[in-house]
Structures are given as C-alpha cells and as structure tokens.
Image (tube, rainbow, N blue to C red; front, side):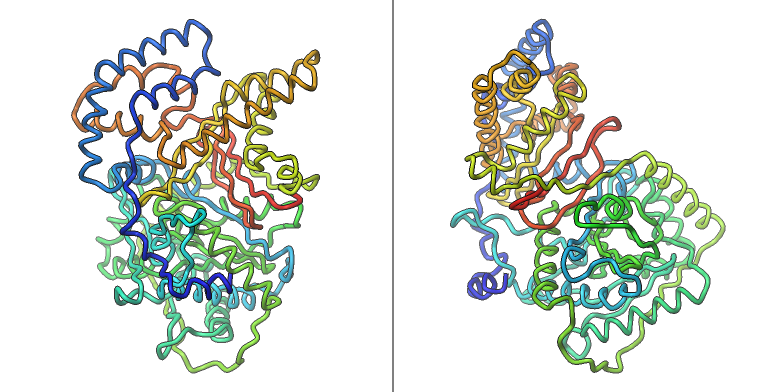
Length: 574
C-alpha cells in the first residue's frame, strides 16, 4: 500500500472523474435475448413459450417505445441509472434498513497481532481510530490510489461517501447527506461521534491543525468509557435508526419539535467523520469461525450504532473489531479498501503505537444530551422490540474453508470466483432438488458513477452441469465438459455485465420510464416467470465476492426464505 501511495503521488484520487465514459444503454434486442436465457432454468416448455410470446410483444410494442424514451433520458445524463438506482434500491425502501440493507463485517486483526483479549478495547481502539483518521486525511489530500483495471481508471466517486455521510429518514423517501470535502474543496467536519451505553459523545480529531495521536484518542475514549460505566445508561436514541423508515422519520420529526437543540445534535451525528461504537459484549471468534462476531456486528445492540451512518466502527470488550455500514451511499468495496489499508498498517506496526506518549491538554469529549419525553422513550422501546424480533429470524455462519483456495483453482486454469459460484449452484441443487435463482454483483465502475449490475449465475449451462453431477451414470468426461461450458458462460456474463451489457438494470429503467409516464405496468414485469427467475429483487441466492484480501462481510438475504452468501477467496482458503 505504501509504495503504491508513493508511486501515485502525482495521480489524484478523483482526477479522472471528468473523463470517465457515460453509462451506456444496452440494445433492447440483446437485453431481451439475455433475459429469455435467464428464465429458462425456471420454466417448463409451456411457461417458456408463453414468456417468449410476452417478450416478443414487448419488443415490438411498448418495450420499443420505452427504450426510445430511455435513450432520450440517457442523452442528458452521464449516468442515466444513478438517481433511479439510489431511490429504488435504497431511499424509497420502507423496511428497516439496519438489518435488511446495511452490510457488516469483522476485522481480521484477530489472525495476527490482536487476538481476542479482555481489557484491550480502548487501547486498540485508539490505534485503530488513528489509522482510520490517516486514511481520511489521504482521501482529503486525494492520495488514495486510483483503482484501475490494467491502465483503465475506475470511478472513485463512492470514496467521497465513506466519511461524514449519513442517510436521513423521510416520510416517503430518505435522503443522503454528505459533508465530506477534499482539501482543495474547503472545510470538512473533523469530529467523531462515540456511542456507549445509550449515550452519545463527540470530540474533534484535529487539534492545533494536526491529527490527535493514539494516546490522546485513548484519553478521550477512557473518559467516555468510565463515565458510561459509572453512571446510568442513556436513552439510546440511536435505536430509532433501526426502525421502519417512515416510523423513524415521524419519530425524528417529533424529536426535533420537542426542542430545536435536538436537531443540532442529530446534525452533529450526521456530519461526524464516523460513529465509533463501544460494545460491552465479547464475541467468540477464531480464524476458522467468525460466526458469532459477525452476527453481533449485523444484529448487535441497536443503541450503540447509528444505522443510517455510512460507517460505524464497532469495538468489543475483548479488543475485537468490525463495522456496520449503510449501503445506500456506496458498495462494499469501499469499506474493503479502508479495512485492508488498516489491516496492513496494524501488521506493519506490530499492533502497537510507536510514537510519542505525550498527551496535549485537549478539550474533553462533549456529551450530546437529547431532550426526550415518554413518547420518545416509547418509540425507542418499540424500535428495539421490532429490531430484536427481526434479528432473531436471521442465522449467520462464517466458517473458513481451508482445503484449498485460489492458488489451486488458478493452477487448474479455472476462475476462482466462477468456481465458487458454480459450487454454490451445485450445493443449492443438491439441497433443494431444483435450480436456485441467483444474484451475483458485477461492478460497473468503468463508467461515470457506475455501481453494480446483476449477474444471474443460475444459467442453463450451470443447471446441466448440476444434473450431470447428480446423475450416477454420467461419465467424468461428460461432467467435465458440462462444467467447462458453465464456466465459459459465467465468465462471459461477468465480462458483459461489467462493460455495460447487463440486462437487469436496463429492464429496471424501462419499468421506471413506464411508471413515470403513468403507463400500465407492461406484462413482461407481471409475468410469473419474471419474479420466479429473480426479477424485482426476488433472488433466493444473493451473493457477492468480497475480494481476495483477508476482509469479509455479510448482508441479509434478499428474500425471507433465501440465502445471502458473501465470500472472500484467499490463496489457500475461502
């Protein structure tokens, strides 16, 4: 990371933003052809023929008109999807987002310098926070290296949303507030919010023009920790962020109407660099089993994380760490990037602070004390109750697969990610006796403000291979051939989706144009095969590769009876 930073000294993080290509609109014919292929595994002959006819009518009728309108829209925007996607996938969604939308993940330090150890929470926390602050400064100075594929720069805009960013609830639609500015753009907030035992504190990360050091951060955290552990718990205002969105919006409006000072405090939390959560629990965790810590990160105490914040850094009593982040402003690769950076720094410094132990006389943290009444306390209790009920319905397992990793799959000339995707298909097929519609994330960051596209991993080729694996009479050669066909198909789909030739976002655009124009919903979208094949977010398998570092994470499944499967691939394990 360090030499990468030195190398890219002349390259600024956001310098290519203006020269990135616009997001293309795929051809209607190609999208519909790909869509038909994707529904095949879930249809019998009669159903497929019916859908084929619906698609033909769509293409020659309303679909063609909607496509023309979409092309018109795309002419005036560098990314025709951006605003729609943010609204439809995140801001219009009314279900509680903390459990259903946020992603969470454990930090991998337990595998080297920071194994679980009681009594290390605050000291380690001060070092961890300091590395986070250094990364924030690199971003401010635009010294985070530009991500590239070969020599092609990728969109970096999501990095602006990591710090000082927060979702704010609305009655029908939420909004994202981002207060981050680079150094050349001007002033940016520099305070951290700390949540502990239902109370909220803030302190500034910059003193006399420079970052506070780990010993100084430790003093601030110790002050907060001692105060919270020797005095009564606070009301736990943060739990309101875990509520259904409209309810939280109304509770927030009421809170603000009680006392205008409440709004000032809410805005302090919203604009803070990040939220640092002090948890009292000590989750069990080993390099082979991250299940309990990951469960606690995604479903832990709602009074000590701000569900709408783009970055909650969570610390446990046994010196174990992780994060919980709102998904609306960015995708997981942003948090993977900073987590990897911090992991490398902790390794490099052997988990210690090697600088001066001097502590300047800096102001103590300020507590944000909200004005509350019985109604607010009732709202908080109700939020906690629904949160705990929902959390109890989620099972999370995070085990290491140690038989082999990407070294072996690459040696066999098989793409490691495709390998895992097909293994998943086979596992689902064996478990349920039928194919499972599957969403895999493809990134579209070649394009201006590009985010993601859907790869539908359950292909006809994958199903044929699964069937051959279940057929005791199929020869090894037949199985191998079918497997290689499934690999080739998946690799091509991933490439197509990353280069703007996916169809799911295109179909979404067409349906949204119809909605905006006040037209009836086209039959394509009400056809049972549309949702049966995963359309409209009905994927039974929701999956994503988190990368090839030590970093891992989870998101809840898309549907109630579904699976969320998120994995990283190491050299010799998964």
